[in-house]
Length: 351
Image 1 (spheres, rainbow, N blue to C red):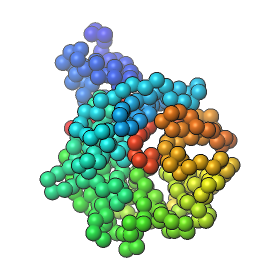
Image 2: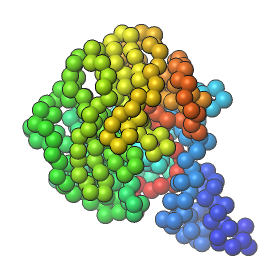
Image 3: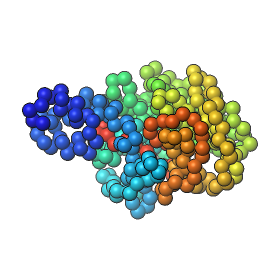
């Protein structure tokens, strides 16, 4: 390939797996420079958003493992053990958000936030001496997004001593800054539970749900360009039992899987048009299962079926009779934040 034009080498290498790119950087100085450019990383990332590049990361007290997804059977493939590259205590790491191969994680023994690429193993600590980048579970919310200038940013909403504060970290500037955050006083109650942020169409979305039967449920929106927050309504689901709204970006359209019930759980799929929710379908009631099992990991996949999966593999299938999609979409966060679906890329957590 040494005699090929640089444009041809660019086109070829933006189509190979991320780990091949990593090895190719050691070929020569010219390749290292080419494969480290922002244009190369951006194009390679866009071409990596395919099913063959998707992996499932699972963490328990003893191991951290990465599994390929077998799309013929819609199950996990053989695991590869991953060594966490940062200090931790018994794998006590929470995964809070993910985008384009980057994971935003929290080290639970120090509450520090990190950006981590599990494919390249590179990571960046986001905490500062003045306690920015410190995450408190059950009080805070985090979302990872990229702006029009391809700057990866972390939105951190903090609830402390009866006050909300919000901060944005810029990978480009390596800096946290405070931005205005306005919401209702009653949402300061610890009875309100924030979901992780879901980035879709220039907006970061969070569900904010009151943790009891009949409680208030809303969606908080953050426009990444104006950096303004607003509140929109939750889909009109029954509030006679446990309510959970899980947001999913499917081809740049925001969807919500809204679960209601207690022992018998009903699931409706909604899509957001403007600021209004439209029901796409209702799933048949699923068999009674424990809430701890329900909170493992759930996926929506290619052939119109929704697979409920745990770290042991596929648990059961819900037939959904909707249009097929090309890749796997996670539709439930881990209650313990102990895993993620991610795409293998060479996106760096630092500049």
